[in-house]
Length: 448
Image 1 (tube, helix red, strand yellow):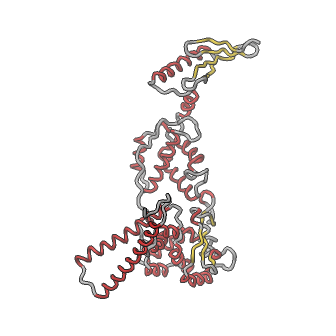
Image 2 (cartoon, one colour; image 1 turned 90 degrees about the vertical axis):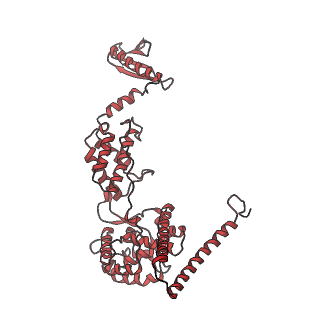
Image 3 (cartoon, one colour; image 1 turned 60 degrees about the horizontal axis):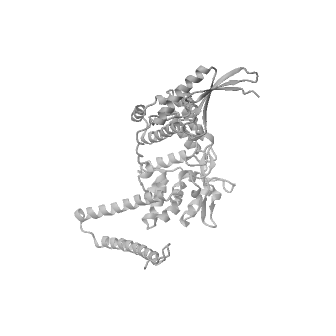
């Protein structure tokens, strides 16, 4: 049977005449050996032999430059895709990035971000698109990004988060996760990520018993119990708003932490019970006996109990208490009580720090706080211990120079405190000595 191709050999590659079953020429295919993959060919079809030969001549120059080591060689298919990508607008690529990768948790198997987190991320993306949206990706340079960082007008934390997102968008343009050819040769995001600023959670504000009582006195009656519950269990505000009366087991003297609160898709709609921040946050916490009468009085006066599913905090116009409303109530009460620095998180911080002040170790604080990451507890522990130590040293330094002689009663109190501190460290030494006496994991005794 007659062949439907006719080959014209050249020093570099060849041109094949393609014919149909009737012998009519339908095109010309140029081909040459792939310089990077043995036994692979590179093909391209043309309507005329002249165009095929012209293309081969250009490819020959590229292959020679690659073999001399003066330039890299990429497959024509990849070059074509990159050429098509030229002119892709930032807004189009950013939207595709958000849809395919940005809306999922990092390092997760396609687990979506929480609605509130996703909404905040989309707002930041909108701010970035207002600046770069109508520009082609390859037109955005390092100077453009640096200028935006200097003049964007965002507060420190949103600016940091927006820049981290912009870096991720540009990094994916350089190396698309779906394997397509690169849209950019390099990212214009060369500036370092702005430093993280201290948040209110990092300030280690603590609440005294007198402060707590004053703040509670300025709270609305139906949410005043929040102060007690936050201090007793060290809850996050969303966990408090999600508590139901049924979560309290007064027979076993525990409260079950099962939910937080969340709105619907895109962080819209009514508040509802939702999963906790982390799996490790789910727990059953012991109820302090002193809290029981306070809880029972609140449940009798302000809840729908014994109706199943009755919420501990029952707002007037919705089923679930809004964390924003409760946060506002707590902050206004703190201002009236003369403690404008107290935030809702300060109650959780106080509960955790009391454990540390009373001699608890890192594992005790982590267990109480339900931190899945021990590093979070370690940082908290170091700040609390550091502040306590600095206060003691400050009192010692000042007192040794300016304070009048102490009375016998003051000396007795200080002596008692020192004795308690000594006993605590003695217990610690005994625990360490016991560990030293035990065999090490390698099977070698600590005593030799």
